[in-house]
Length: 85
Image (cartoon, rainbow, N blue to C red):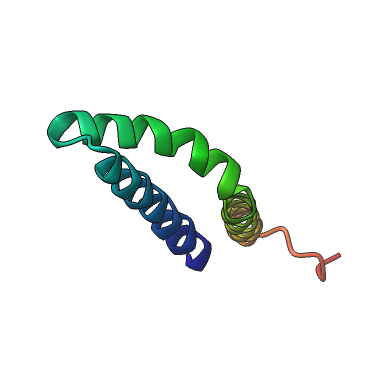
């Protein structure tokens, strides 16, 4: 879950950074938050591509482990034992 944390913190930092720049430009209130949100989405997509790829790889790895454990459990419950013959 480290990859999830890195990606989430990165998204928040991009949003806060965009908000800070927009604040310096002169935007305030709801407009500041809305524009920062709209601006941070494509910026996050571009800037956090490696972190997103690591997060996706982590999720895929965990799904593969779950599938393997589930199949192993099903095999044991059916009584299909490779050593029996």
